[in-house]
Amino acid sequence: MDYMREIKEISAEQAIILWQASRLSLSKIYEKAPEILKVQGSVIGTLGNFSASIGKAKSKKTFNVSAIVAASLKNGTVLRYVAELPENKRKVLYVDTEQSHYHCLKVMKRILRLAGLPDDRDNEHLEFLALRKYTPEQRIRIVEQAIYNTPDIGLVIIDGIRDMVYDINSPGESTRIISKLMQWTDDRQIHIHTILHQNKGDENARGHIGTELNNKAETVLLVEKDKSNGDISNVSAMHIRAMDFEPFAFRINDNALPELIEGYRPEAKKPGRPEEEKFDPYRHITEQQHRIALEAAFGLKEEYGYKDLETALIKSYMSVGVKLNHQKAVSLITMLRNKRMIVQENGRKYTFKPDFHY
Image 1 (cartoon, rainbow, N blue to C red):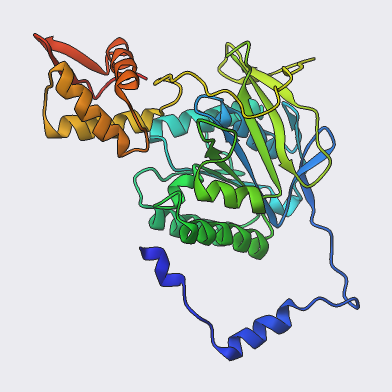
Image 2: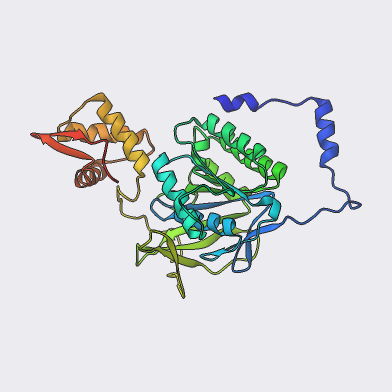
C-alpha cells in the first residue's frame, strides 16, 4: 500500500530535536485551546482538536453537519450549535468523498441557506471540495495541501473519512489517518469534524478507523432516527470530554432544511445490546454502494434471469461491504425493481437502468 511509504524511522539526531521540542515546562505559559463549537453551553469543538459524527445510513448525518457549518459561517446559532470562530479563523473547508458534483452543490446551497447567506454565488468563507473520483492516497494529499495553503482556515469537515483509507479495518491505515488529523489540527490550530457510518448491528463506529476515532476524538456525536418517527433525527453525545448536553432533534422542513424540534424528549434506551434492525436495502445501503455493485454486476452481463441475478448481486454487493443471504437478496431485488434501478423489458430478463433516480 502507498501509505507504507511514510512509515520510516527517524535518525537519533532528529529524535533528540523532537524530544527537546516536546518537553513541558512549568516556567512556560500554555494557552487553553479556543472553544469554537458548543451545544447548550457544552464544548464540542476546540482549535487544535478533532471530532466526529456517526450514525447509520439515512440518519441525516450530512444534514446535521450542514448545521454545524452554517453556524460557523454566520458565527452564530443554527439548530443547537453555537459557533465562535476567531476573526483570523473564519474560513471553512468542506471535503466530500462520496457524492457527485451535483449532490455536493445541493449540500453547499443548503449550508448557505441555513446560514442566511445568498446561495447563488460563492462565499469567501466556504470552500467545498468534491473528491469522489480520487483514490484514498490522492484525497489525503489534496486535503493536506488545502489545509496548509488556505489562509484563515478554522474548521474542516471531512464527510466520509472512510474514503481516506483503502481498508477500513487496517490498523496501520487507521493509525496513519488519525495521526494525520492530529498533525493537521495541531500544526494549523484548526478543528476538524469527520463523518463515519455506524455498524449495522450495534452503535459502534465502523471498522478499526471507528475505534481510533472513538479513542482520540474530542467529541463523538451520535445521529439517530427516532424510533417512533422516522422523519425525526436526534443528536446526542456518544463521547464528550466536556460536560454532556441534553439531546436535541430536528426534522427536514418543506424547504429541505433541518429544523429544530422544540421540547423533544428521546425515547429511553433499553439496557443491553440494541435489537438489530430489520434489513432495509434502501436505508441500509447507500446510493454509491448500489451504483458500484450494479455497475459491476451488469458490467459482466447485460441481462439476467432471476436466479442468475440473485447470484450476481450477492457477489457484487459483497465487494462493497454488503453481505446478502437469499432472503436479503430477494428484498434487495424487490426494492431495485420498485425504484426502477433494474427493469424487466425482455421477457423474464432483468437489465440495469444507470440513470435511476434514488
